[in-house]
Length: 138
Image 1 (cartoon, rainbow, N blue to C red):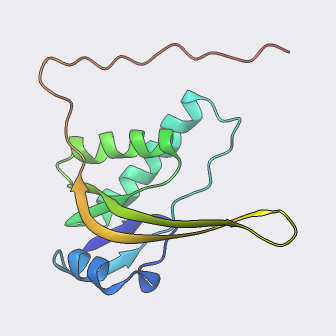
Image 2: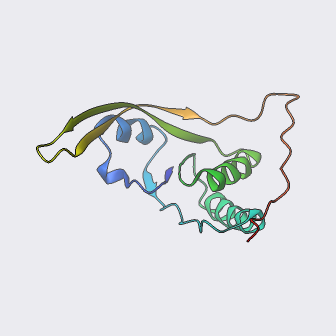
């Protein structure tokens, strides 16, 4: 099963992306959660633990994990540590920009799926240490 853990329902994907995901088996959608902007590292770690456990319990063959960056990073690391393949969708961006009659800039952007790119473990010898948590002074 290919688990789509994003906020982009697979029913809205173009045929090439559905076919690429379908190579792993049936596609199942699981919406990526909202992340409170004020959440600190401990809250994010707790969310990542819960979501990674839930995903692992679904026994996916592959997970498309894309959402809020810092939670995505934490979840990807936990899934990879369990041997679960995780990918990101790679697309070609096509934009058209113009100024309308009222002088406002308008833009239309379309994304054309190209491939799923696997997340990888850090390179051997590359140490990734967490930074201390900073709080904003008032």
